[in-house]
Length: 114
Length: 113
Image 1 (tube, rainbow over the protein chains, first blue to last red):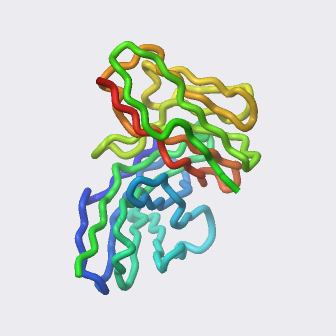
Image 2: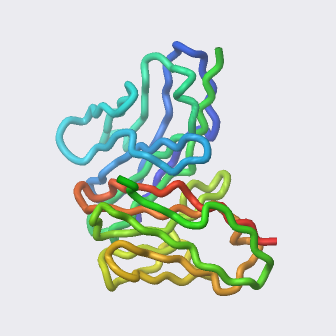
């Protein structure tokens, strides 16, 4: 069965600093990987996804992530944090033949300070 | 375009009471899901429906039942609520391409006293 580990339940950065949120996955077959963002009192929305092809994927609001098969990682980055980036971020993995189920990590709360 | 709509947004129940959470999507998606979100545990799948007429258990199905009423609607029922079911519940839908891309409702916050 597939699984996702997000390192760091809380991350704090200064406005303008690099954002790095870590995600490692476990899967016996090539996975589809996703990052979702949840703003306070809202549902989750898709930030970016990797299915096949280019391993560096770009998403909304300047975020990007790189699929590294050798490291089983899919870390999320943004060069310069903005106050509006404060939210909870979830990494998720989908494996075909796994019953059409998306498995989520436990989430990382990002705080952006002035 | 409403997307995924959940009702109610807030509900307080006493232990042993029953209730149904309603979910409807207007994107003509085949698959629908119910998740619960608890602090430090991420989202856990309760039940899902890959297509109209089918439902399957997820990771934490005990204490819940579901009904896929038609392609648009997928309801979650708590027959006898327990304090452990205090949570935020999210409904989601997926059109299947790419698999795993889900569209979420805004959530239903349930408190069981």
